[in-house]
Image 1: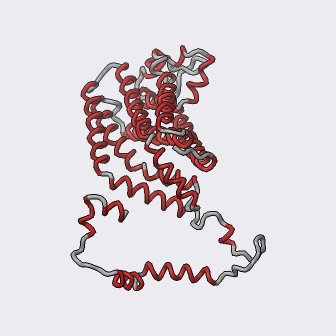
Image 2: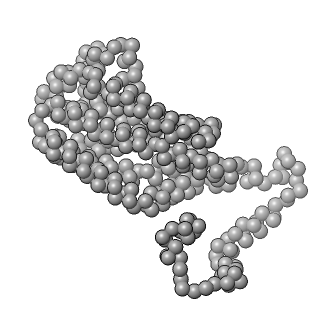
Image 3: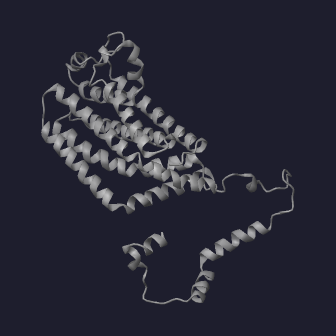
Length: 336
C-alpha cells in the first residue's frame, strides 16, 4: 500500500513536513507495539526443541499444521482485504449506484403501473437478465485476483475455501446496493402486488440470484485459463439460463429430452418463484400461469409452496458452486 501510494497522487498524504533519519525511524519502531509483538512471537519460537527428528512426537503440533491461522481468521482476513479494496474504488461504487438507479427508473417508466400480464413476465425476466449480465462482465476480473491467491497459497497464508468465502461475503454490500436500488424502483413503479411479505420475498429472490450468479461465474473463473475463456463460458451459461428460463420457450413445450436442463438452471427456479410470488395472490393467478405454460409435468398448476422450493434449490446450488470454486482453486493452477 505504501509503495502504491508513493507512486500515485496520494503521496501528498504521506508528507508530514519533517525529515526523519534512519536512526530515528529505527528508534521509533523499537519503541512501538508492533515491534514488541513481533519480538514476542520470535522469542516464543526459541522455546521449541529444534533438534528433534522429523516424525518425532516431540515436534510441536503447530509446526505440523499447514496454515498458521485458523479457518475463521482466514475468512476474516480475506473479508477485510476484499472489503477494503471495494471501499477504495469509490468511482466504481458511484457508477454502480447511477447504473442501478438509471436502469430501475427506465424499466419502471416503461412499464409504469402496467395491467398487462405479459408485462409482469417481461419485467421479471429483464431484471434477472440484468443480474446475469452484471455477473458475466465482472467475472474476468477474478482471473487477476486469482494470481494474488496463488501467491498467498504458496506462502500458506490461508486455505482456498476461506479465500472464496471471504471474497463472497465482501461482495454482499455491493449486491445489496444493486438489488435495493434496482428492485425498489421496479417493484413499486411497475405495480406489483402491494404486500410487504411479497416485496421482501421479491428482494430476497433477487439477492440470492445475484449471489448465485456471482458464485457460478467465480467457479468458471477458477478453472478457466484466460479472461477470454471466462467470457466465452459466461456467455454459454447465460444462453442456457435464458433459453430454459421459461420465458423464451414456455416450459410445457420444452422437448422432454431437454427438460433436465430446465430443472437444473437456477434462473428457471428464481423466475418461477418470482412469478408465483406475484400471481398467487390473484384469483386468476393459476389461469395466467397455465396460459404461459407454467405447469408441472402432470399438467397440474404450481402451488404457493413452489416459492419455498425455489429458495430450497438456489441456496444449496450457491453453496455447491462456492465449495467447487475453492476445490478448483486448490486442485488446479491456471496461470493466465
